[in-house]
Amino acid sequence: MERKIIITGDGSKTIQLVGLNEHYHSVHGALQEAEHVFIKHGLLHAIDHFSTKNQPISILEIGFGSGLNALATLVASEKHSVSIAYVGVEAYPVSKEEVLELDYATLFQEARYQDLNNQIHLVPWGTFQKISPHFSLLKQQKMFKDITDTNTHHLIYFDAFGPRVQPNLWTESVFKIMFDALMPSGVLVTYSAKGSVRRAMQAVGFTVEKLPGPPGKREMLRASKGL
Image 1 (cartoon, one colour):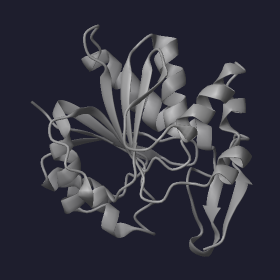
Image 2 (image 1 turned 135 degrees about the vertical axis):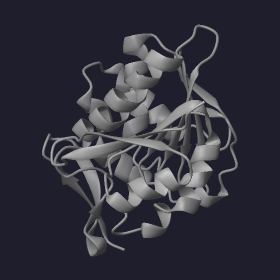
Image 3 (image 1 turned 120 degrees about the vertical axis):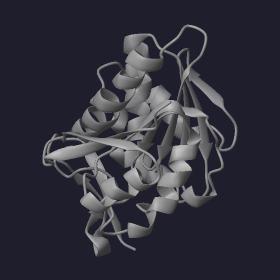
Image 4 (image 1 turned 30 degrees about the horizontal axis):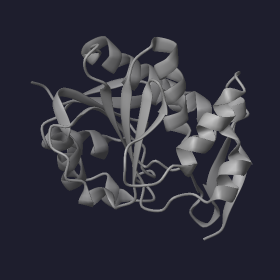
């Protein structure tokens, strides 16, 4: 399938799957979406509820993709001085050429983020790697249905391709895997606010709230596991 890099509404780039008219991030702003959905309503919420000096916040990303959410989380971990153990699951990793063309490190002010972004993509898959003093990364190349984590994560970034393109990733069976992977009181955030998605989450036990969406989307969802 043809893939090309495009510039989104906030000047950051994303990958377009031309035949499907689908994108790795919002065309209204890739970075804005990452910071609004996953950092503001995900990570900062988790910091308020879970952050301790003895244990890192554990994040599972469903759709590691371009690594933008991971890089934005690394930057936020330094800003807020919070330790993060980040697990990124991806069945089909992006190419080195795409990483270079996306050039996400330039979205952040400090030059050292170029090296840190390179490390995110160059470290081996399958083992935890310390990228920065506050951020450790485990990349796993596998299908989402093969996740077996139980009561492991404080937070899930659910960033799969949209339900229009891959409806099989937005089903009760997948959200049951997500529910099981979260610790008690854990939360899942996603950019989609589709009714069928919300109902699938509720069917497996999540309490779901609608939140204001990023630019170009009226709403997003945050789902809580409960105690």
